[in-house]
Length: 349
Image 1 (cartoon, one colour):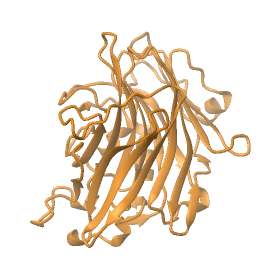
Image 2 (cartoon, one colour):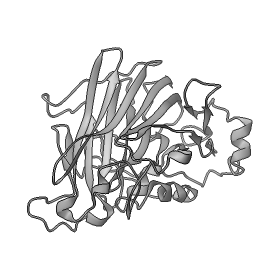
Image 3 (tube, helix red, strand yellow):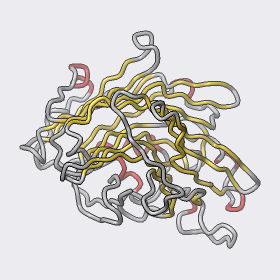
Image 4 (tube, one colour):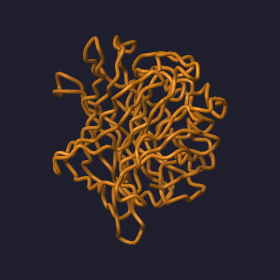
């Protein structure tokens, strides 16, 4: 589950939508940078909202996600945070025997820390966030405006004989600043991992370079009686051989939880627009009591309108509950089981 309160562990049921991207002929491309633009259109009322819009991706040895959250204390106060979470390589979770490198992924900034991950189970890795409440030197205030495009970039920024440094940044066009969400150093050669780790990956076990990603919109704390609409747009990977843009999504999502507020009666859906209808690929994600899925979303998801109040949705974040999955495609393939009740852990930034 996504972050809620500092070191708070609670059992929750979440609600949201998951969409996997289709890179088509570019899925095997060698790339070291991924850009995507997030625009929040509606978070209403914001004083109730606890919502996370995130894009999952990874290197050839590590996987995780980054995105932006709205938080509420239920008393009329709201704030926003940026998050970047990455898990250790599946082959090096709790098995490090190297005195120089006790972990496969290492925090490389004052706003990152080990094992404060937002998933239940025995996950190990690094999480970064802004703002950082306990360290004024590392903390950056975040104020996300509706209708403003925020460009997220995950990129390998440096490398040496031991591994590579990856960073997520967010370009804020209102404040004219580039915010560092966090830096993580991934160790490879000293731990017997291949240099393939130093690129975006379509699988982590075995390490396989390529492009794989999905997005989830998640309501991570009840009540759920508010509406969220946001867009991820122009997802672009860059590497030594060129620039690669996502072609489409596998299919738009369509889900419903029955019942009465605050536990049900809400639609979760998406709609996408691809060139030439749009200048660049756009994925619109919508959730709330006043949202209505499109006819095409119903057709693509025959079971969309057949859930019952006893079928409680769990989060795609839980794919990491036992550590890093072997691949994001495998993770998304497990989504058919996400209506099974499962306890959640959350750690709040």
